[in-house]
Amino acid sequence: MSATRLAAVMVCTLVAAACGDEAAETVTSPETVTFSTAQFSNVIGPGGRRFYSFTLETSGPVTVTLASVTSADTGAPLTIPLRVGVGRPQGTECPPATVVTVPAALQSQFTHLAGDGIYCIDVADPGTVTTPVRFAVRFTHP
Amino acid sequence: MVTRRTLAALIPLVVIAACDKTETPTSATDTTTTTTVASPTTTEEFNGTVTVGGSSFYAFTVADNGTVNVTLASVGGAGVPSTVWMGLGVGAPSGEDCSTTTLTNGPAGASPQVSSVYAPGIYCVKVADIGNLAQTATVAVTIAHP
Image 1 (cartoon, each protein chain N blue to C red):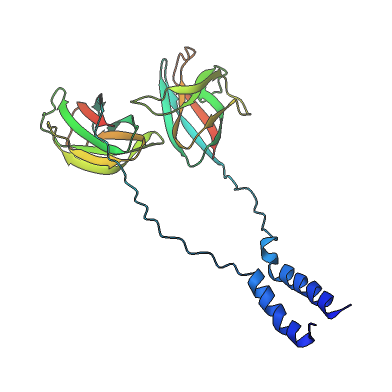
Image 2: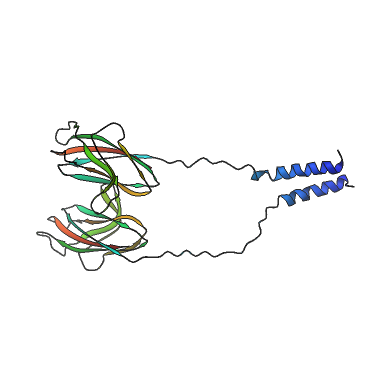
């Protein structure tokens, strides 16, 4: 190989090696979202309702389960449905944007997709409560 | 004809020139961020009750960054002096309560007892008995916000 050709090859090799940092971009993994689980329990009587406020640090799904409904007097499990919803606090209430009327269950009963900010879980008597009942709602959110 | 000595001198120069990442200086740009503070455009009235040792709260939404004026307009009820001092606060709904970040104690009046600037979001006003009530009180609160 001539000195000129050798020089050309060496220059190209050195330039490629010296400037190689631009080609090797670091691939970053997507941001991890941490989910929190909370529980809201209280007692409502006939026609009653209660709500619980919480903050979403980032947007994502709020998954809600009416985990238990029991007699406030005896503690006996009840199969009556309650109205459970997710909304945003307004005035003295929590008008739900997503709502279901369901009995207690072991698995999640609905999911509400929400942006970041303050939201609330609303639990109300849909007309099935005749004596005070204790409820427990479990919900997961980002 | 290129000699080996010439090559040895040229190669580092070529490499340095090829990798010169010196950016051409650009003129500095001054960026000024102006936050507008909006005046209240909406007025909400909260009429509630406060039990002995208890509290009551009301949630409202601030649409634009601006001034929120909260006035404990009146306190009443059987056996409750209208001049009784109550706790009045502004904060964010949390759990089954209103977690206050601004709190003041005083009697009802015509002028705002709490006035501050808030970013857009959901807030709450809380009225609480600070140990002065012997009977359940009715309260009227006016909230003016953007």
